[in-house]
Structure formats: C-alpha cells, structure tokens
Length: 121
Image (tube, rainbow, N blue to C red; front, top):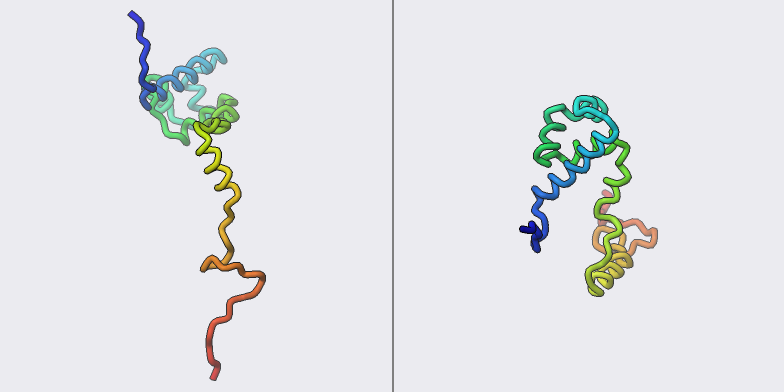
C-alpha cells in the first residue's frame, strides 16, 4: 500500500525532514555528532535530539548550518517564493511603492523644524 498523503506535511514532519537532511550531510562529510556539537557550539544533547526528533531552535539550526557551511541554503528559506495570485502581485507592488511620510503627524517636513508655542518671560 502506498503512503501518499494529499495533506501538507505537519510542522513535526518538516522538522524531521530537515533533520534527516542535516544528518545525511553530516555523515557524508564524516563528521560525528560530537564534532558537529564542537564546531557549532550547540550542545551534543541538542544535536542528538534534533537528528532524532527534528526539534531545534532557529538559532541552533543557524549555528549548525554555519558549521556545515550551508548558511546560504538556510538564508534562502522563504526567498524567491512566487506569488500565488495576481492580487498578491498587486499588493506587493503597492507595498513597495508606499513610503511613510516623514514627521510625527504624517505631514511632510521640508526641512522646517517644528516650533513649540512658548513665551519667554
């Protein structure tokens, strides 16, 4: 029987998949979990837990990526995602063209300082 799912993967499944990729890369490079821990500054327990369960903090994952020389791949996460609809493209364009106006109250300043009303006695 096939284990094909029409549902998107769960967060746990995503974590396990990333952990499996990291474990495979670590083994391919012949780096022990202990050595990866030393290189990354992530505790050995955290490395082991990550590789078995997929649970890890983003900070620790970043440290592991740096230790394995894969930080560029991690930095690409969520980049270059194509828009899902024309509405998303239009919203993206309008957000890029929107610039907040300077000044506390939203009025353009044109280099003129605000003057407080005060009377010197």
